[in-house]
Length: 397
Ligand SMILES: Cc1cc2nc3c(=O)[nH]c(=O)nc-3n(C[C@H](O)[C@H](O)[C@H](O)COP(=O)(O)OP(=O)(O)OC[C@H]3O[C@@H](n4cnc5c(N)ncnc54)[C@H](O)[C@@H]3O)c2cc1C
Image 1 (cartoon, helix red, strand yellow):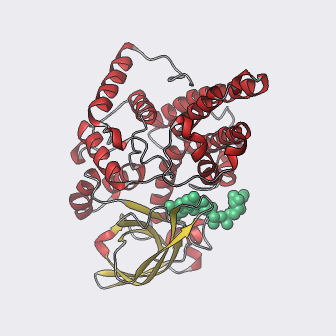
Image 2 (cartoon, helix red, strand yellow):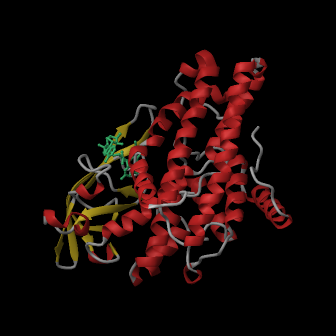
């Protein structure tokens, strides 16, 4: 088991940790544990019910203004909450709804969005999927071609998105569209529309991924009518909003908690099988545990810097590179020590417990091959960090 906290907690923080533990004991139903972790499983009802509990407690809207239901939390409180809930295998709070779409609506949304959509995010009755990538526009998002043409009180949308995670479960698509077709206006010709996924003319088609699961989709638009009130912020300013959103997505992808839980599972398997008596295995395990601790401290430092500056910058890219790479290293270590189990595809319903971990390992390893791609590939993140490094005299972090 890795140390629970890589930094010592103050008296106040320990008291907050105890509050969180009590809350988990009282509100997290046993049947909700482990049913909505990363990609492996996704059950909407426990996720919604748990999210409502956390929102009501005031532990999910730290980045919302108070007038829309925001409740401030310190960085350490968020860190403690994330750690305790990950260890308890609570359903993941839908980051995309609250901290990507919700915060942008608070800042840039019109009165209708604030009045109608924010409460639906808070009570989890709306669930968003992200419609950014297109077959010819992934890393180069500004090449997006899905067109939205103003037609009276509506936009008429035509085109295609790809890799839209959970579009088959969500009811809203946070979509980047081209509102100015002039090639000279690339970045300045994009807008964000919030499109109901049951709109006439919209088709969601599944993509089954190498892990055998269905979480990815293609989305096709054939003359889809979207009311103009569903335009987020200003027309043709979509690039600005997408960059804010992507930085927040990277922070979530960089979250080390799921990797720590994975490492704990792997250590449990290794211990049960007596593998830690092998000096080479023990040494590799210890190295990974140290790297996890070091990255956890770095994560706190970076998030602190982001909070002080009140803006997201290259730091989220830095964390995304390190966090996704380390997750893959942990899974590689698991593959090496699991022997034949590390090559067996699991049944989708096998329980995910430490001793059953081998059952899930292959799925975990396969889907996490994509951790260095989704949310903007690590090569692109290195470009972002590199540009800042070149333009600065002093140290980066
Ligand atoms: C599991 C998964 C879930 C996803 N979920 C979503 C989602 O919900 N919504 C959504 O909109 N998208 C989603 N994506 C898409 C994801 O954001 C893109 O796959 C990613 O941005 C890369 O784009 P691409 O696949 O078009 O690859 P490309 O952009 O074609 O890149 C191909 C390769 O070239 C490299 N490359 C490209 N340009 C450069 C450059 N300038 N410098 C250096 N290297 C470069 C890339 O790093 C990559 O290795 C998801 C992807 C995956 C795998």
